[in-house]
Amino acid sequence: MDSMTVSWEEPEDDGGTPITGYWLERKETASKRWARVTRDPLRPMPLGESYNVTGLIEGSQYIFRVTAMNAAGPGLPSPSTDLIFARDPISPPSPPTPKVLDWTKSTVDLEWIPPLKDGGSRIMGYWVEYKEEGTEAWVKAKEKEVRGTRFVITGLKSGGLYKFRVMAFNTAGNSEPGEVPETLEVKDRSVAPELDLDASVKERMVVYAGGVIRIIAYVSGQPAPEVTWSRDGAALPPEARVETTAISSSLVIKPCTRRHQGVYSLTAKNAAGEKSKNITVEVL
Image (cartoon, rainbow, N blue to C red; front, side, top):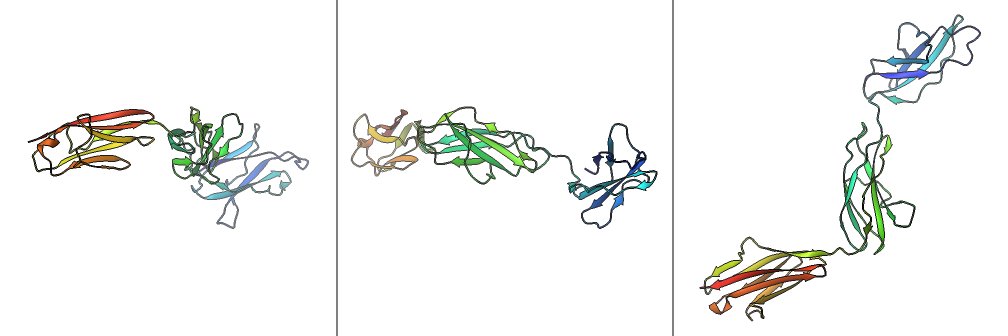
């Protein structure tokens, strides 16, 4: 922006004769001298005094002052304005759009889409707040601003019902809050188990005697599922070795013989449900 409009009120005391004009002056912060913005005095306006000052340097700071004059000459200059940046007008940003990604019995993981409009000034950060059902006050989840677009709120009461909201801010101030629409009960999340076979595993496998039977599956669910293996609905052969981690379970038999063939079943079970996979193994 290379221009701005300066407005002022006419003097309460005209000195006994009508005001005939005004000198409007500007000064850059780096300059020591005041400069008139026009060659001739500005004439009084019937609907209020203002003038659009052009030729400013975008990003520079200016102060302004006005001197009224009548038939006897100019009076004293007005007090100068506050420092003003030559830039487009700014306003607070529009609200962000938050959602809940995950939760436990005492934490909630929030993520949000930044504001569609930044108000003409870059987003400096976000305020994250929560409110327990039955209370009026919103509580800041962090005393300092959040710089990213994701935050984990800790220290929540297990079994409590909570609302969540996020505000963006820039140099003009805070946005209106963007609120998660749903009220969330803070408790351990229950997710039914999922089982995915490794790319090396087919639901029907052919292995040569003396080789290796290796079945790998990836397991997920909340709480962590209990994993069990069986063959043909009964116990595994004694040579089978099973290893289960937080994300996978594997069964290995080496070397294998024809008596190791059959239908191997993997089952993952938790409070939210149960999932099984069957793998038919043929040994030649």
